[in-house]
Each structure stands twice: as structure tokens, then as C-alpha cells.
Image (tube, rainbow, N blue to C red; front, side, top):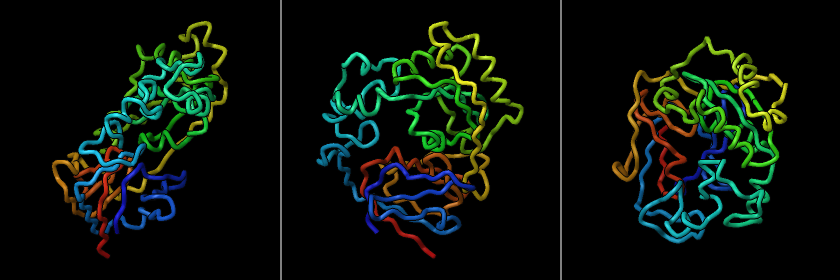
Length: 265
């Protein structure tokens, strides 16, 4: 079957449920674990914004002109503290109002260590699942993306804001991490003008992923270097497919790639 790749759709369940494909033709991917999967790229990449062909994908599925102008690829996507939507400034004010001038959560997530992150409140728990977090807790809720970014920056001297994808996919965890304790230890470290956004809800969200057996080490493969990928699907975590307990394929990174997908029963 022919599919234009995009971020896998997830649903919080035990384990997490994954679907892949375009609207109207989504495929339940959990059912393909332990089956032989073949992904063949035909060389076509279609920009997710303007739908024009592009030889290279920028920022998860854009052609270069759209990457430079689309609000979905604004610098504040990666660095929320750069957001200016609250000032009425942005690449697309309607988009900014809908997506960035909305309540955002600052959270702590745990895998091998504690990381700090930001997501729009409506993206809970999707964002955490996409990152492959094992457990998370919300630290604060701010009225917009900018303030969430400022709060995140204030905690970067203590916590990383990046996920170690290799450790995440080999499931290296630190079971001694107490997210509730970590959260409350942060409270007094926040700048005084940001403490008003701290919330007292101590709910810890935990996630189980459909992985038969976690690999001891992982090697990433991509379609630019390997246009045809084939192997036994042994797990899914974050936005990665795990093949033969070793090779991993980042689906989200290949947004806008047109592929032929074959499942051998």
C-alpha cells in the first residue's frame, strides 16, 4: 500500500496504541509487531505545507521556502522562549493565536534522567508519548507559549530539555527518580514572577509501549541512505519503529516521504 508518512497517531492505552497513514486510511500498527515489514521509498517527498515536490525535507516535511515561512516551523517550536505571539507578532497571527496564545504546560519527564519540557495543554499526553517518556508530571500551566518557555529556561541549569533517544529506545531507566519530589524541589527555584503558574496537582502519568523486547543497542536507519528497509517489527516507542531488536526508524523525521508499505503475514 502507498502511504505518505506523517507523525504516527497515538492513543493512551496499555500499551500505547499506534496508527500510521493519512486521514481516512490509518492503519493499526500494533497488530504488525512480530511480522515482517518492508518500507520502500520511491524518491518522492511532497511538502506538507504547499504540497509541492521537494528534493530534501526540512524540519519534518517542509520544502525550504515553507520551512522559512510556515508558522508550524517557527523558531519558537524548538525554543518556546522566542515566541512573540503574546505581542501580536508571528508568521501567521491566526495560527499563533490558536496554537501559541493558549495554555501551555511545563512538565518533568523521566526515562534515564529527568528532563524539562513544554507542550500546549491540549497536547497532553500526546507530546509525552511522542517523546517516549516513561512517566511525567506537570509542573506549571502558563497562559501562553512564551511564559512556558521562560519557565523552562529557568530550569535548564538543573534539567536537560532533550531526550537521549538511544537510552529511550534501549529503555535505560532510573527507577529511583521520584517525579513528585523533583517537582516540589523546583518550586522555590522558579523566578518569583513565575511561581504563580506552579500547580499542586501531583498526578504522575505512566506509559507502557508495545515493545516485545528492548534492544541492547540501537542503530538508526533513514530512507535517504537506505531507500528500502525490511525486517521484523519488534516494537514501537516514541515515534520510532524497532526492527529485529536492533535497527530503529524515526517515522516523524520522514514526514512527507512517499513510501510503499508491505506487511508479510
